[in-house]
Length: 304
Length: 304
Image 1 (cartoon, rainbow over the protein chains, first blue to last red):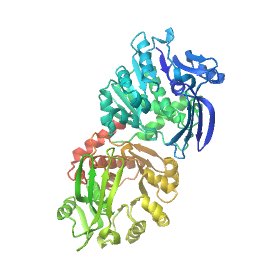
Image 2: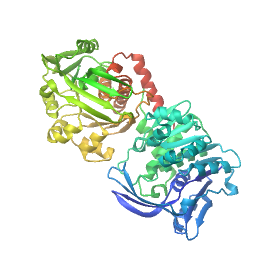
Image 3: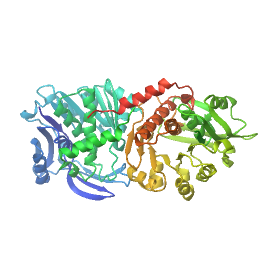
Image 4: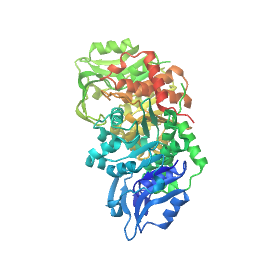
């Protein structure tokens, strides 16, 4: 058992039309782990922070049953800092500042106890580092899921292709899928990506939901139509965390269960955007999660 | 019985990365009527063309059982002409030319036999004309559905609001909904629009599907993930035609049946974009339509 999560850990300063959060915990590894923690244990986090990373946030991760043996704390160093401002319609944002700090020289080292993890989620980091993580595993994981972004698709294309050969599931957003496949049509783009290695491709479309492509099926999941979205930060990572969390919990990779996992991912993303930063992932009950899952059924079901 | 369709009739010149069609029949009234004709009869069309409108296209409309008593043919006049070019990703298009011609002074006059129609679909025309049609009806229709666009939302706002008071269902795309409600969040926008008159709002999101808002429910319909989209022109009108066609056929306005109607609208839109102009709506079989409906079930269904 065990889910290995590798990614960024950040202190984010977020402005939206609805408020502001200053230097709050963020980064892909944090959002993924927090979301997945509602489904599976143990979760094994690998990431790097500086000594400015708040003890309270570390305690929160511990309280969620997340193992931190792989968390590197650079004494005297400063945590990766991102600052952004969302526009009124929340689909647009400006990055105001990016300070890589200790993340610039991040080298994911896996503690011995992590190397047998059956599930691996590689957050959006340099594809060379993602590959290094895969190669550090002692046994072939049951499932390797990988995220990436335009920056790597463009800047480290060859390395990304090497990494993709070893990946079971790629999770990207629609513009990333189009860029990676050089193909505007999402169905064709997904098929092209499936020839690069991943046998399953998930395309996230933000407020428009997500598409799941497997060898045998295409599945379209809606996004939850929320009246109040406070902060879209981390929604994609919360999706990935809920998705792999459900798969790790059920150990069932059938098409039907992959669809359920996509919905659980969408459920966690919907909770994530309802509050600032990771607040929306801090205190969920099983009843809330199941209730929202049922809401998704209501939202998308129609009769013959 | 009877479905009254009022809208533009055009000769379109369409360029996409996949081909070109020169001066082919188009316009909202044509797409709506053609799509609806697979579900209901009689369909009563009101529109205007010049003497350059091809006889073959009129024969096509007649062959679909569409009544043309309300079709005004201006001798010596020229039909409304639109010319546009789609970009490679098909979500963007440039209008190259718009010649209103006989459409500029279009005044929808309803023949006596049209005035008892139980279903009215007002395509995207001047809201003053839309209202005039409603006021020409001899009896209150069972269902009045209306489309509009940014041009009228901005340019004839007060008139549009007057028209909306008399409308049961508004069908708009996402940017139009946001503009009409001055609200970026689509759920809030739909609720605001429902306070303007329509008790049901449908928001079309192109390749991302459509949202149905009624008093009791929100329903998210996927778009069909087509590998080959040749020409997006008319997809929204084909959607509206399939939607009202199914409602007129079943005479059932329950939430469950509205959902089915949204899917039938999506089915017709998916056929529409698979060929150029109205070609995709010319020769569909009931089996094809039902088969695509079943595909939509497969596409969106997941189990608890």
